[in-house]
Every structure is written in C-alpha cells, then in structure tokens.
Length: 379
Image (cartoon, rainbow, N blue to C red; front, side, top):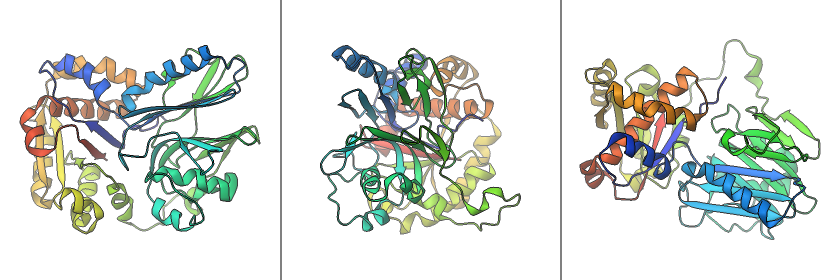
C-alpha cells in the first residue's frame, strides 16, 4: 500500500501571480507538499568532487520538500544530504545533525514528539540546537541501534557512525514519512525520501518498509516495531487524545483541513478542545483555524461549515473548478509518486488549497505574517 506522505503538510506562504497553473508550478518550488527531504549514499566507488556534485544535484530534486536549508555531509565514500523545512527551531536546527564531537551524523525527515522526555535521559550530553531530531544522534551513542522504539513520532532517518563507517536507516511505525532504499551498480546503498532521487543512479530500488530498520552491521532490514497489539484482530487500546495533541508541537502557525467527514471532524474537535491548554496556544492563540476546499456547492463544504460552527473554529473556505484540478493533476502525481486514488485525492485537495492561499493576498495579510509557515493536520 502506498505510504500516506501528507498526514502533516507545511506551506511557505508567499504572494504570487493569479494564474492558477503558473501558481501551481511555482508553488511546488516555494511550498513544501510534505516535510523535509533526505538523501544518503554509502560505499561509492567514486568519491571524487564530481560525485559530490552529483549528490548535490540529486538532492536538489527534493528541494520542494525543504525550501529553508540545504545541507550536505561528506565522509570518505559516504554522503548525507538534507533539504530542510523548518517547523521546530527554525533558527538553529539545520541538518545534518551531529553529536558533540561530530562522529555521529544524522539526517532526518519528521518530528520526534517525545524529544523533551528523551532529553531527560540524555543529561550527560550537550545539545547544539533546539531541534527535536537531535536526540537521535545522542540516543545512538548511549543505546546503539536499539533506541528506535524509544522514539514517539513520524520520521525517516539515516545515521552514519564515522568511527567505523557503519550506518542505519529507519522509518516510523506506520510509514507517515516516505523513505526508499536503492542499490547502485558499484555496490553502494542509497536512501531517499522520494524515488526521483534514486531512479537515475540505482540499479534497483524499493519502498523502505514502515516500522523497519536497516543495519549495515547486520547487512539487512529487520522490524523494530513490535507492539503487543500487532497481532490483535480487534484493537483493545482505548482512545487517547494524545495522538492528536502531540502533533500540536510546532514553532510555526498550524491548522486542520476539515472536510466535515468523521475522521477530520474528530481530529479538529480534539485539537479545538485541548488547544487552549497546549504550549502552541501561547504562540498562536487558543482558537483553532480550519480549512476546507471543494467544488462550488459540494457537500463537503456544507458539512465542514456545520462542524466548524459547532466546535467553534476560525473557518476558511475555498473553491476550485474541475479544470483547475485537471491542470494540477500531472504534477501532483510527479511529486507524490503514486496513482493510488486515496492519496491522489487528498494530495490534489492539499495542492489546490495551498495555491488558493498563495493567491489570496487578503488572507495572507490578515491571517498570517508574510513568509511564515502554516502547518496543516490532515485526517
């Protein structure tokens, strides 16, 4: 099943021209349709300057995922590249990230929701940034490869231990963030957030399975995620609002995409109820922003308005035409890399609403400071 790349979507809001199609093309270079982008290569026969330039070129194919920073770490025949979308600690959390003596290097796409609790276990370490992902480097130092199940979050990461040139890669439990693995003709091992960074240089590549870890020491992939309920036919775990609340961890404005259906309505209701008691309320206010987009007169728009009125959110409604959706379709497929109907429908909706926000100058002036990020939670 294709991974759902867009459970959390962040956009850089900037003003642009009013043409829908030209705005769309510009949007994918100015806006992030997912989160950060990572690319890592290990064991290249060629480690010349030309190879370094090639890695940079391939990493740029992921630029739409991270417009805020481009980073690259080279160690002999190993490369870790990163395209950053700044959500937590925008000022100092540039990647790749390191331990104290920079012998451990990590590039991460995602968020670690329990990073503050994990830092309590790592008091002997010195943190260089406020990034939630820096804990990964220090956890590896203390716990080796067996720390991944300590992480509560959505993540894909690749870590290099320069002391022995060993490396690991891991993906979150259900595959919220995308990750692919590939193999070059020279025996090199590649990892990337999207296939387009692997397709020209790898002999073969495949989806990196959710809940798994690759270890160069073991030479293969194994499952790290083994919860007690994994084999249950009927889930016994009770409802817990923390599944929504922990996703309010952000240093940028956020909102919920609300269709008026059961899933998005529940997410919005939980977020609206608990927002006033969260740290996010101190920065962005206690009233939740909800967004909906659809064809004029569509039932989703009506249902979303009713839910928004009931739970008391600050609701924003946008419309698009069938032709606008058709115009966007080809490039949406290029970026999400799947024809899966469910993913495609949601991605098209997200893309159209982002463009409407881009071209709605009055919204940008009234609602958010120019050049701020706006994070959407999608159900």
